[in-house]
Image (tube, rainbow, N blue to C red; front, side):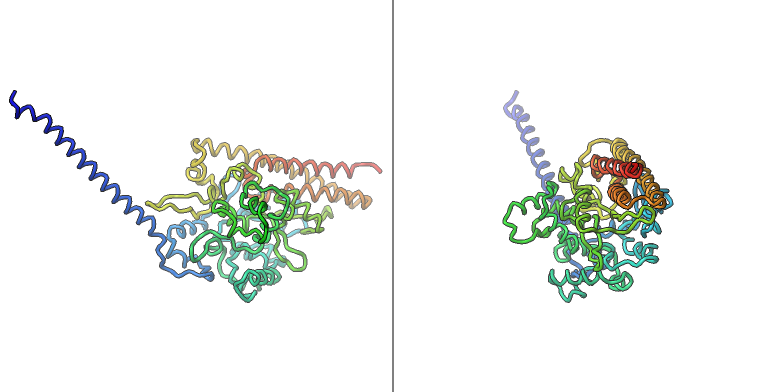
Length: 464
């Protein structure tokens, strides 16, 4: 073999290395270019086309800067339904034969419908028979409308003190007069800073309520920032916009409205009753302390409480809260559009979006996840129906006892038990997860509802 021929293998190896190196360099160059293109695409939704302000209540103004979020927000107008909840206007009074009995003498015995999506928040409040047949206050706008400009107008300025003043004035107005001050349901500006798009809380009742909670003795491990504030010097009130983490804000922005509340007698000031804590019995204890009632039951004569929609309170007692999972993680999960990661503003039941809402953490197939959730909800529903029967039986017994002239002291004891039983029943019934947010807590509360109702009947059956 000649010297020249012996060099061919070495040359082939050299050429091969050159080709591999060139191919790798080309691939790396393509990859870097692709990454830069995607990064540029990901940043494109921050381009400022519209100069937004605190008065930008029309979501169409936000569409120019945030088209992806706006497109999904429009879908809150869709009327969709899971097994136990949804966003279509189901007539609950027709669906549940006990409700008129439970709410006798109160506006919810006139009209009680399933809540629809955010797009309908103001329209549905305008159209409910509760507003048409009973006088309602302007306080309802706190969560049904983009109302901050009205608060600033009535309060005479932008400062926190002026917003509080305007809030109090609008609460005290009649619904029809207050309604003339607004034009849109809750929209982008209510949860996002118009200059930075950062999450924020804006509702005065919530800010005052969370400050009261921070001062209470209730443990709130699901809100680490509150615990940190408690351990500090407390020079200033707890401020979620300054103290809360971004992950906490993904819950607190929702908790501005998805909560229990009451209207202060005479002033109709909207108040979140968290002075002793978030649990059903802690809220009840506060109501008892101030001698508050929503109405007097027509049949039983008991001073009653009406739970509103305590999703935040119930969620706070569940495993997801303890694990740091926010409302938005499940109801507004992230999605990708091209290279852009955005939060889905089509707020709905996670059961209608299992892949992104649940499978990010729970690595089971959709059938398994849906089955687990519906098992919890079916069991809660069965226990809730037993509670309804027990409370109805107590109402019937009280009505009969009143007609027969039972001594006032015994009636008062049984009426107090009716108040306690129905408050617990309603706390689970009005909360929109059918027990899923905190299954054990929901079962505990409903068990107490049955117990108190049957105790009331025993009181009425006792002989003098």
